[in-house]
Structure formats: structure tokens, C-alpha cells
Length: 568
Image (tube, rainbow, N blue to C red; front, side, top):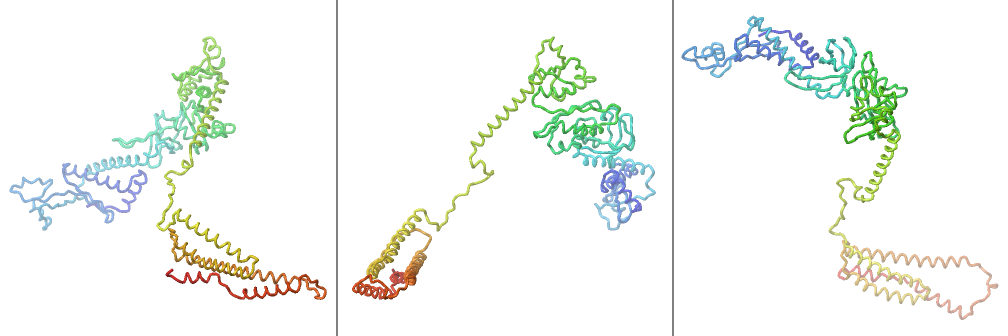
């Protein structure tokens, strides 16, 4: 058993964990494996069973060999004392020992030689390195295509060692931009091109010369590209020399190339300053992507001014015609301009001066004609798209506008629902009743003698129970019960009675009102209109009217008798 200083040991674990990005558990496991292998070498056999216990709570490391208890052999040489121990020997160590038990033989600190310590150290460093590679792969496998920032640790002839936090990455000279130079401590941006895991551990490839590095810089510096308003269609790059970037937008109010260049070239200059600190600054041409192959090639050859082009779309070949004396500008230094234009457009481009094209009989389409054809093609596409949308709207019906999965609601049916036929029959019955009641109400208020009104009304009232009986016998299929219908009819009868009484009272009030408005005249001055005989007849009629008006005739008494009789 080896005693350890828990505080110092724990601080060392924390430091390793923070520096290498490896958890404490992995570090302790690596140490245990290293001690097991080192002690096996001390014992002199790889088949020895070695156990290592690291107890941070009690502050010790226990290392030793385990042997299995077996029956005592007849010959002591029949037992492999490297792995086994006879029962009799085991009982000397533990009196309760039995066959099959394991006896642990702990090692003292003095028994561990310097060679064993060196072996443990070597194995531990290897195990820790392997753990770091695994942790590194896990940390960077999802960062492919991202930009990271580090500090230069060491400058070598063929590249740089860059610290990126918990590990160091190496970038080769070919992955740098042109002749840029760095010194230890400089900050540097790196693009993670790939991350792979192999037998040697994680392999992380970082670069600054990749076209995607330039694309990331554009995304960081130009917000229209970051938010998707402007789209980068392609990049052709020779790091440190020249790059061509084609951009496109669906927003007609945005100039894609102008937005990338910025006012007075301010935006593009910020990008150029991040492309190395070499003597020769990398130049960037920003062009507008076009679906017209001819115009796309013309713009890709900037800064040269192209007069026209002959396009062979089938073989992906093009001949660009430039003005006399502009050939070298179109080709570029060491052919970089035409080479990048070919990479960007996907066409093999040959450049001819106008006089040479005339001598060789090369026909071409001028830039003005290419622009006119492009406008016509766009207009035709727009018209075709408008026609397609109109036809689609014409074909679509209201169901097509409903959301997916919509099901039209079906009519609900209830057990006690009245059928349409029964509804019609019930409505006819009610209408007939209203028609039969209307004449009675009108005739009741006609200017007739009270006697005639009484006789006719009494006859109609007497006939009412028969009509009601006929209505009752009519078969109507409805959820309304007969009892409810009877109550409803009784209620209607009472309302009719009340209305009649009100009308009669109103008539009397009107007569009184008219009498109250009659101008009072002196009897001696009033002219006699009727004879004495006529006046006597009028008085007799009024007496008869008063006699019948004083009688309280209830036209619905027989109704009440009918509804009170449940047997009818």
C-alpha cells in the first residue's frame, strides 16, 4: 500500500483535466492500467493477475497480485505458484480460506523498482495521449465547416502549431495564404476542413487557403449573406493571388455584387485585410450570377471588358472576344484570370481579340444581344409562370384551399329529430288553424248588432272542439308530446282571449274619448237632426248593447272543458 497526499494528487488531476480536456475518471483509469502493466513486468509475467485500487478518500494506492486457492497437491511442484496458492498456505494467511477464494498479496513501495516506475510512466503517458485523441475527436467532429480561432505556439519551416484551447493543431504551409507570415503569440483564424478518427487518433485538418474559408469570411462581414438575402453561387480561388465570387439574390431591390463591395469598396476591403499579411494582397472579383451562360462568362472575365462570346453549350466551351490590346488583361498574370473564370463557370474559355476573331471568321453574339436575349427569356418565363398559376387557380376548387386532413362535417342525426315530412305536416296544421281563427277575430269586431255577433261566434266556438279533435287525430311524428301541444294551444287560446278583451276595451275608450272631444253646445242652440221616433229607436238599441256587453262571454269555455277531460 502506497500512501499519497490527497490534496496534491487532486490538484494534479484537476490540472490535467483542464489542460487536456480529459475527465478525471479517464485519467485515473489510465493510471490504473499503467500501474497494472508496470507491476506485471516486475513480477515477470504478463499472465499474472494484478489489481490496483486508488482510494482518494483514505489517501492510498494499493497495488498487488491476486492468487486463487486450490487443493493441496501431492507434489508441491504441481501447483503454479505464480497464479495459485495451496489451501494449507492460504490458511496461514487467512484461517477461513477455502478452495476457490482469492488471496491478495499487496506490494510495498520498496518492492517497486525504478524500472517499474519508468514503465508505469511510459504506459500512462500513452494511455493519456490516446484518451486525449478520443476527447479531441468528440469535441471537433461536429465543427467541420466552422471557423475557429487560436494562437500560434510554434513556427516551423513547413507550418505552424496553433493552440486552440485544450489542444494544439498543426497547419501546413500549403494551407496558409500565399506568403503570409506569423510569429508565436499571433492570433489566427482557421477553417475546420475535416475531422477523422483512425488508429492513431483524431486527425483534424485546418486550412486558410480553402475557398470555404473565404466563404466564411464573407458570411461574417456581409449581413445580407448571413441572413440569406444574398446567396453565394460559387467561389473560385487561388489563395494569395485572386478569387472570384459569384453572388445572387431573389430580391429585385438588392444589388448583390454592390452590397458585397460596399460604399467605396469598404466591405470588400475588410475581407481582403483578413486574407493574410503577405507582400501581395489577394484580389477579389465579385460578380453577379446569371442564368445566361454568355453573360455569366462575360462577367467572370472581369476586370477585362468583353465584347461578346461564342457559346458551345453542348461541349461546355466558349470563345470570349475582347478588344484589341486587352488580351493580357483578360488572361491575367500567369493565366490566373481566365483560369478562375473557367473554374467558376464550368466552361473551357478561349480568349480572342476582335481583329483575330475577324481574321479567323469567328462569329459571336455581342454583349448587347446577350442582354436582350436574357431579358426576353426572363419575360417568357415570367409569362409562363403567370399562366401556370392562373390555370392552377382555375382548377382548384374550394376543397383544395382547405388544410390537409380536413374532413367536411356530416349532418348529425338525433333519435328524437323531426323529419322534413313531419315538419311540413305540422306547419300545414298550424297554418290551417291560423286561417280558421283569423275570420273569427275579424268578424267579432265588425260593426254588427251584438246579437248577430253573439250567435255567429257561439256557433263557431261550438264547432271548435271538433276541429281540435281532428287536429289531435292527425298523425304527426314529432319529438313534441301531445301534452305539450295541448298546453301550447291552451296558451294560444288564452292569449287570443286577452287580445280580444283588450281590443274591446280600447274600442270603448275610443268612444269615450270621442265623446269627450265633442264641443258642448247650448241645447237651445242645437239643431235637431233626428226625429223623436228615430231617437227612441237609438235608445232602444243602446239598451240592448249594454245588456249583452255586460255579459262576460268566454268563447273558450268549451276548450277548457275539452282540455280538462283527459279521456277525450
